[in-house]
Length: 168
Image (cartoon, rainbow, N blue to C red; front, side, top):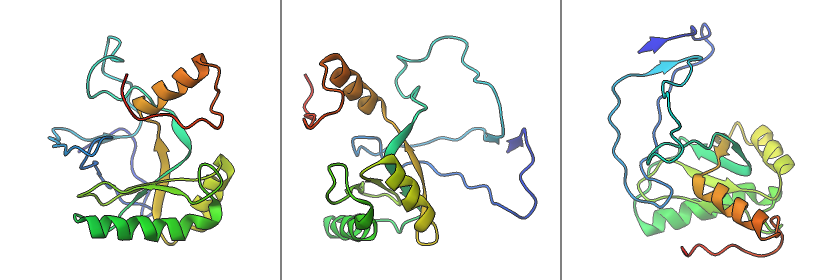
């Protein structure tokens, strides 16, 4: 491991965590050759926006939380149990349409995504639930960015219409 900035004395530990599935639930394998922390400028000299596997979307999702450090799940029953547990735990913060929070729990994973009603509710949940769950703001996927761009072009702006998940 290399470092650019020293880790704080006795305050934190370095955790290296990778998702076990991609945005569509397909298994992924990782080979790690080098790890560094601290500020380092990107090593890519060209525009990497269209390169497969490069997530050029660095914006945080305003309402979605990434909940990590959960026990690994592998069966449909365990997935349903995880979804029910997180829906119950985050119910008071509301869901995307004001109802139940939307939970995504991929198979063979130790993490889940919870989408709440608003950005302020996500902030409140992170503050109040930090002793129960390890969580951060989720990053927006390229698919979410493309859906948002499509809605803006059509003049929807994110209104009541639910976007289809079918590909054109």
